Length: 235
Ligand SMILES: N[C@@H](CCC(=O)N[C@@H](CS)C(=O)NCC(=O)O)C(=O)O
Image 1: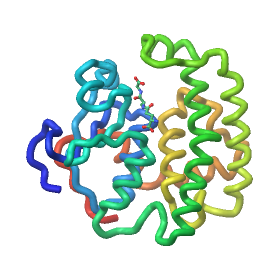
Image 2 (image 1 turned 45 degrees about the horizontal axis):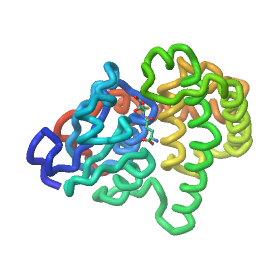
Image 3 (image 1 turned 180 degrees about the horizontal axis):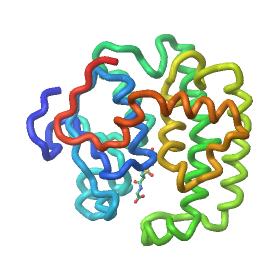
């Protein structure tokens, strides 16, 4: 991967928003934790919905969402878990954050899917069901105000379950932070002010895990967008 231009043509380019949105922070955290990566980064003004503009939708992501990773052959990867797994495979050196064996990879994917479906997606959908979200998206997303209460109950239930699952262990898949931790933490970190019920002291294991993740150097770094020629040393 040799960077050649800044316009994202012929390079592996991450389209990264100008603000720390939940989905965008996930590959950022992952890249900082994983290291051994080199790519270009091009900012997208999420704050003014540049991601919904015709040029972005026709040249980068027809779904109008961020982040997106354009590969050097021109194909575009979206879905943060796919981007993270791609980073994991192309990284040089360091240690996989998905797993070193078939069993570890399967367990990481199981937990990643659980925390995404049972917690992250529902609490973001709860926020998206409110008036602030309706005003922000200006009709660019199908929101579900009618399902707001259900989404909160689904996420609360998922968090209660995770509180039990995390009891007696430091991270979701065991001894070190993996993709599942990074996905859920990225969402909780960026949404904690907008969704105040997502991290409460009463869920002691989740709250201790959140503190543990917050203390990692990658957390502060991930609040800033990647820009230009990004080179990360193996972690
Ligand atoms: N399933 C997608 C979701 C991407 C997504 O919803 N991104 C949000 C940012 S957190 C976005 O683009 N929001 C602005 C919009 O929908 O206009 C993924 O995994 O990447």
